[in-house]
Image (cartoon, rainbow, N blue to C red; front, side, top):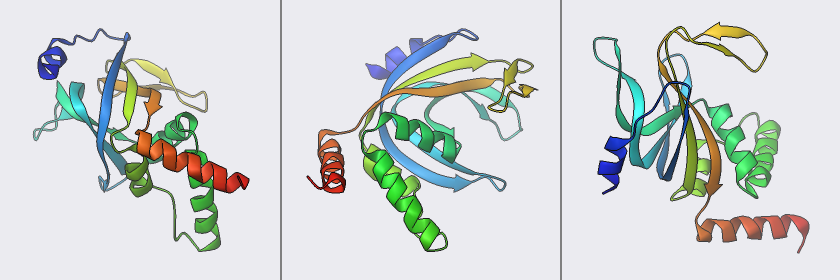
Length: 171
């Protein structure tokens, strides 16, 4: 049933579409130049993928590749208690020359089976966008921008996060 609904999804350029889905896994990989987090979901949705002939085609996928700092920032703002884990791991990393950093493994533990609401907006090659520094750029290829609008972690994980908060506050 979900598969059929996904196939009927139509996306109009520059119009945001909300997708409610569940996290299946988070993996880290390198494409040679950059590190990315591949988040796999329980639903398919429209995306552009690169073919073996180096062409981009629109198809249905069940994953999104995120820039790690962008994905982490979105998650920190939407999951109560995750910022405490992040801060603790970040401090450990700074004190131990990078050992104990916060990354995909910690996010996989916290977000396994979490319910997310994604907002996807289609853009075309040649469309302009403004980066975080206010610089205007032009998209080389068509694609989708993705913003995470809401995250609901599992009840078990929320209970663990609540315990961490209580412990940090001495309750």
